[in-house]
Image 1 (cartoon, rainbow over the protein chains, first blue to last red):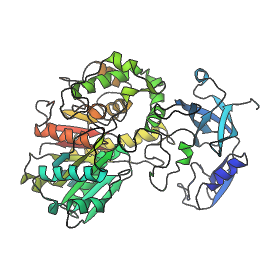
Image 2 (tube, rainbow over the protein chains, first blue to last red):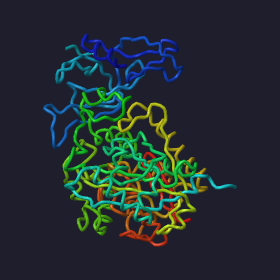
Image 3 (cartoon, chains in turn cyan, green):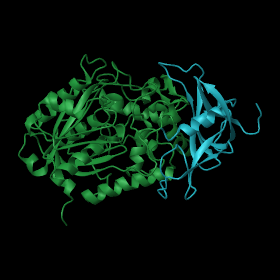
Image 4 (cartoon, rainbow over the protein chains, first blue to last red):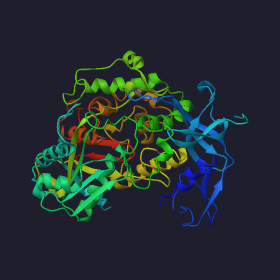
Length: 124
Length: 384
């Protein structure tokens, strides 16, 4: 039993899920067993809007073990308020700005369905 | 006013192995060798040790090291949850144990085959960083090296203050100048020019180049902490612990500390400064030299500003003006730093601080009475 199974189960169903305290309503990510604000273990799993803003980004390459496809790793702020690490796709590196609005989509990467992000308002 | 209990302790012994890229020995072997050197440096024997401290990631189990050294009994053990930034926290733990009386002489150790074994800079997949951390939320997305983590933390700072790769390079050139005249350093007699720094390849574009990264070292370092009174009777000049602090604000994480705001991190840094001041009676920048954790060059910029050597955004000018270099007003990383001497996660930087106070450093600064050693945790040591 892990505290984060729901997140990956949700990703397989193309849903971006996070925890919200069942007592005080504070959202948290990455998942954990207890609310750090009110110490309740009651948890609601909520589906996110999928909208986020870019806070930081970098090109993920490594000299000794290069990625097959260099990825843009980004720190995002979900509209729900929590920070999340994910990837940006379909956006040129030079077009990325702090505060850029992006939205979630899902893709299988290395055998695992992961949330990924692209420019908001662009359909697949 | 009564002295703070932590200031009634001392670093009585320092020990190191050789630093190489292929030790040919096990990590436990390196830990035992460095530990024995530190114990003997203090004029003690393994039978005098009754406490062991290290930090997360270390592969050498406390009880296996005890067995290797023949330490008859341990009354105190502990590990800090930091990565390499925890180096100075280990001294706080050891000093707290000694000050409280639960241990008389605590051995601190750190040893790795970072180059010939599992390469430390390589992408992480399954390395255990502690049961509570959800590394799936980082590694699966390609956020899997310490260099990338530093780049993520550094970039808002670089954007705000216009810090360039050349600015980072000026720190690295300074550190390599010190390393070039430190016979223990990996880059002994191998200084670096700014042009060479700028020509080196990107590790994380466009923030961190090859020469901004610390070494991957095979080697071990160790310290012995005991009471100030006892240290006066031991072999070496007394190096007193004037202050030692760690701070983990809510939601902080080992290495992948990306869930907090800049304000959260700033609160941690203020707390470290306040803890050091409360213990020692002086401000962390009121020292004669500083050893600043430099796993990646941006960390030195944070260290200079967070500890008050200069104001926010002023580190690039402070470095460019030569303050931290040879003959400067505040020599920094006089052993060559983790980018020039070795990367034993900052324990080797504490050793350099001890040497400066004892007057035993390769690049000895004249008249050193107090040294700050800092990263995510911090330590002020000095003459009694």
